[in-house]
Length: 199
Image (tube, rainbow, N blue to C red):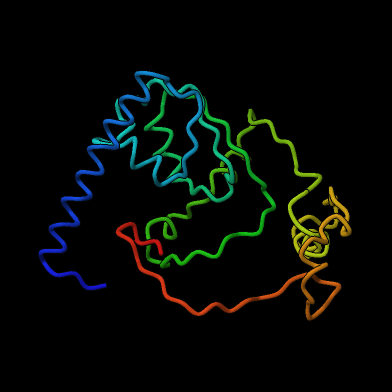
């Protein structure tokens, strides 16, 4: 999307106004109700607790950080979080056998060059870290669980639901293979890259 110089200036000014308003709102929230729980993803957590971030003045009020999907948190990101929230107790939850995400990373990038792992891989090597393996899953239809179960869990993963319990869509839509309730829908459209490089 191409913007004229005038539109770019307007956009920057509007963004600045929104940031100032948001900072005032955060200050009011912490002064009036002091939230007990804040749910936030990793990148915004790092951005908002950085110098000038909207939570920077409140970092010392955080008692506990629960990191979900820890197998998706790279070791360098964990180090940044730990240094940012050093007085905070950390709990990381993740599945050590979860199939790896597809991520584009140049072999020349520092994480690839220095062999960065996920934080869950790192924590598994520590003797003092308690581990509770995933035994039962409730996420998907049992037919969709069969691939990761055989590939990553050696057949030990138990389905917490029955196939008949996951029939809402299957009762309405006809699938190419009724035994596997999965269909790929190709949607035509476009995406716009944000300043944070996401779409």
